[in-house]
Length: 107
Length: 207
Image 1 (cartoon, helix red, strand yellow):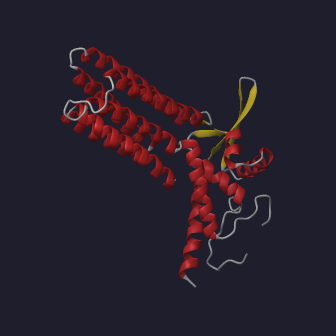
Image 2 (cartoon, each protein chain N blue to C red):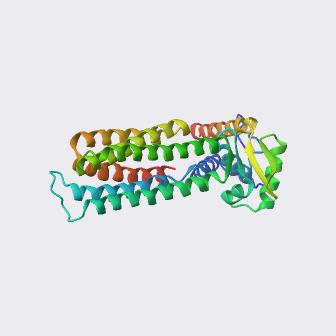
Image 3 (cartoon, each protein chain N blue to C red):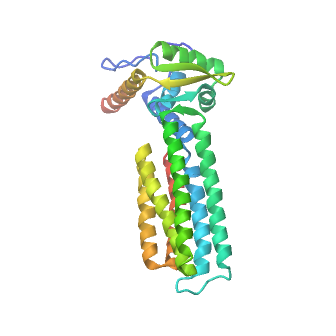
């Protein structure tokens, strides 16, 4: 893909369809809330393995927080978005918008 | 870059992906408007509709239903709608933990306490009133609780549609109480019942 000279840089961590969907979904949570891993998996229609891989990438970037805990004896994993993640998604969306504007403005 | 996540294509497609994913997530995590508003709409339309047929606009019933039957229809439909809403809320909150589930729980209890207190007040005073007056008291006070809690819910969850729904319920309720039991039932059935159904469908479309 060749992009224009002035094109803003797109965050490579987010610029992948699967991770973008994860980020957008987590961004709809209220601040201070966490979603259970199985719910997130069902909501996105991904396999557990696939989702884990993407979450690890996002966690490494500091965009999501993964909390492992127990409900009775069963282990439960919760996922939430960090402030850094929210900002990164905001920047990414802005960058995409400006790409779209410049594509529409200059023939 | 061809790592696992398969690269997203054009900016247009990316923006569309962001929007559709956001809508899907909001519907799953914050309630499907179709499920939250429409059951109440149907319950009000049929329930207040039954009361209206019993009361009539000038004191003469339009249909041969007893007062008890009309009230029974109205109340049981409310219970069904309440069960729908409660199931939806429980299903939503089981997926998420944190600050908002505590908020949701307090909000849920506020409904319960409000409705119990409403019943206590209305039961205490309705024996002193004629059937029409008593019916209007129950309907008016219960919609007062609904209106206030909708507005408060709008403030709590930052949802303007919910807040305006509360304002709408308050306005129709106030007007209906001034006009009398028959009008109150008619306006509630058409404007509130119909309004809730329309809002559910509209919000769902927009989401």
